[in-house]
Image (cartoon, rainbow, N blue to C red; front, side):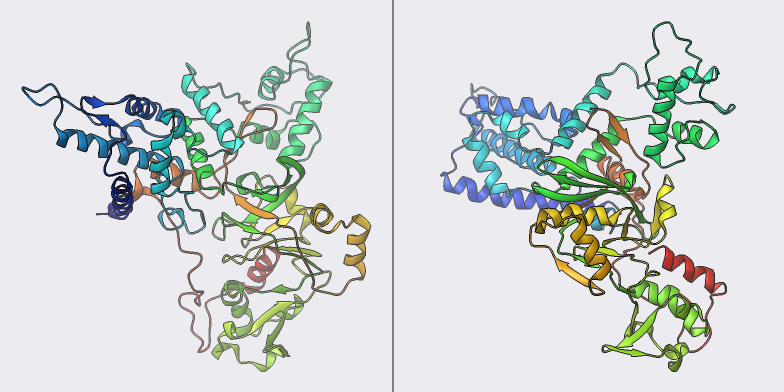
Length: 540
C-alpha cells in the first residue's frame, strides 16, 4: 500500500502516453511505425538495440518492454492482433524511455523525496516524441539525443562508465593515525600523503621525505577545504584527507538524475550554488568567471534546491524577520519580558508604523500579526549587500557579519539563506555585466547611498541552487562531497524502488505554527532564551 503513490503516478503517465498514441495513430490512419506484415522492421530493431544499452545512460533496460512476435501456428506470419500489440508495446516503451531520459522516474521530487527538492523532470510532450522518432532516419540516435545536453551530465556519465568497466573499485588512499607530518622531515606516511594528493615523486628522491612540491600541494588542499593552510598534516588535516568515500556507479547515477531535472537552458550568464560543496560560481558563456565560498542552511533549516531569476541587489539592506523565526525564536523572549530583542536592534511595526514592543502583552499576542525587522547598520545580520531572486522559499544570498564561519569545512549554519564570503566582489561582477558599474561605483553606493537601496537587475541572470555530491572538475577529475542533507540517498532509494525507506522530513512550506505546548495565555517552555536567540540571529 505504501508503494501506491509512486505506482499511481506511473499508471497516470502510462495513461497519458496511451492517449497521446491514440491521437497520433488516428492522424496517420493507424499506419504502423515498427512492424510490417512479417514482423518487426529495421527501425524497431534499432530501438530495441538501444533499449539494451540503457544502462550506459544510467537507466534500466528491464524498464522497457520489448515485443515478441511469433507466427500463428500453421501460418507464416504473425496475426494482425499480435502485430498491433507489438506496435503499441514498442511505442509505449519509446515514450517511457523519453520520460525516464528527462528525469521522469521521480515525477515530483518535492512531494516524493523532500519539499526542499523543488525540481521537476524536464519532460517532453509524448505527442512530439512519437512524431519525431517516427520521422527520424536513425531512431536509436534519436533516443540517445533525448538525454540532457549539459556537458556536466555527459562528464558524469563517462565517469560512471569507467567505474562500471573497471575490474576493481579505485583504491581509496587513507592515512592511518600518526604523528604530525612536517615539511622538511621524513616519515613513512609521507609516501601515502603523496599518493593521496597525486604528487609525483622526483626521480631518485626518497618517497618518505616531505619536500617543497608536496608542501605546496598540502597548502593548496588546506586552502580549498577551508582549514589553516600551514602545510602541516596533523589530526584535523588527516581527518579531512581521510574523509573520502568509495565511489559507486549508483552515486553518479543519482547525480545524473538531478541533471535530468535541471532547466535545459541555464542561461548565458548565471549564478549557481552547489550546496554540498558550499561553493558559489558565476558562469558567463559557459566559463566560470567568479568562485566564492558560501554558508548554507542547517540540516533542519535547509537551503532549498530550485532555479529562479536574479531581480535586484540591495545595498545596506534591512532584515525583515520571517514568521518562522518570529514565532519559534523571538516570541518566547518577548513573552518573558527579555531584553535581547532590543539589544539586537530589532524593531516592531504594524501598517508601516513603529510600535514600542513593551506596549504589547506578548503572552496574549500573535507575533505573526506584526512586522519585525532589523534596520540597516553595522550589526545587521545581512551585512551590506543582499541579492534578491524572489521565490516561494523566501531565501536569498547576502553578506554576513559572522565572517569566521567561512573558514569551517562544512558550512551548514544558516536558516536557509546563502551567506556569501565576499558579496562585494559578487556585486561587482554582476553589476558590471548588467550596468557597467565598476568597483569604485559599487563602493560609493555602499558608502554614500541611501539605506535599503534596491538596484534592479535589467539583464536576465539565472540563479540555480543545486545539490550535486559528484561532479567532474575542469581538470577532468571526479570530485565528491558529503550528502549533507541526505538528498542523494533519497534519490538512490527512489531509483531502486525503495520508496518506503525514504525519510521525507517535514514540509518546510507548511504554514508557520506556534511551537507545540505554547499558548498565548501566559507562560512558555523556553528556558535559555538568550543563547537561543543569539544563535538564531547569527545563523540567518
